[in-house]
Image 1 (cartoon, helix red, strand yellow):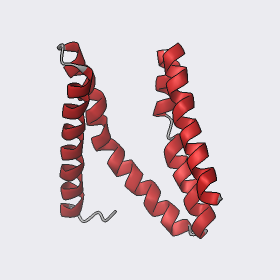
Image 2 (image 1 turned 45 degrees about the vertical axis):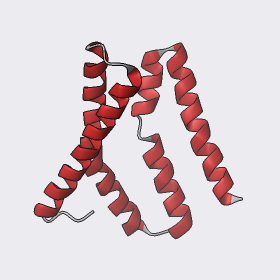
Image 3 (image 1 turned 135 degrees about the vertical axis):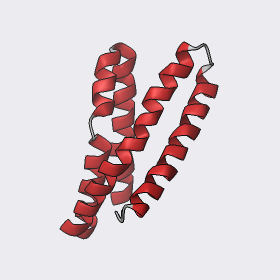
Amino acid sequence: METLIKYALSAALVVAISEAARRLSWLGALLASLPLVSVLAMIWLWHDTHDPQRIARLSVSIFWLVLPSLVLFVSLPVLLRRGVGFYPSLLVAGVLTALSYFLMLALLRRAGIVL
């Protein structure tokens, strides 16, 4: 039952953001930019473990991995504005983002930062 509640709340969040974006794009962007999913993940993790060190590690890991995720939000509009279709743009932006994650993880490992 607990897992179903997690799914329902998480899905409701995604639906609420997409509905808000359909009406007012700035409101959808604001809601999507808030770290609501991260906060929910921390709440679920706390509820499951009550381990402050795990929450701290998750928070630091999220910080480092937000940086490569920004590649999606730069590359997608560039591709769309150049006339590339939505799904091909999303695919290319997704691949670039995935490559950015791999690069970030390699750089973090090299710097001795363990996630």
